[in-house]
Image 1 (cartoon, rainbow, N blue to C red):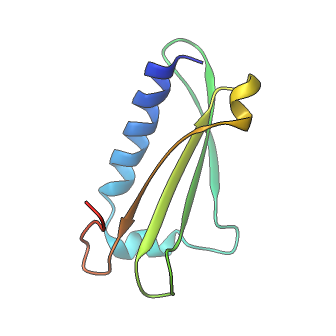
Image 2: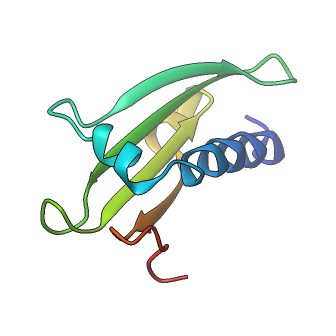
Length: 95
């Protein structure tokens, strides 16, 4: 797994998710609590991406979005991750 390519892919995923308004992120919260997709990088490596959206503390309050990516092999045990938290006002928490 190419760390540079992996970082680029996770950064793109986070960027897309950060553009969603708070109300849309709330709609992504469900009982499954995660979405998984597969992306093929420019190198031809297949990456599995797991996106989780959940209440950070209490329902109706801050929403946490977490993204994990791995390219198979041993990296499945130690995926690269990134996350952010959005308040109901739409502001990013802790930034």
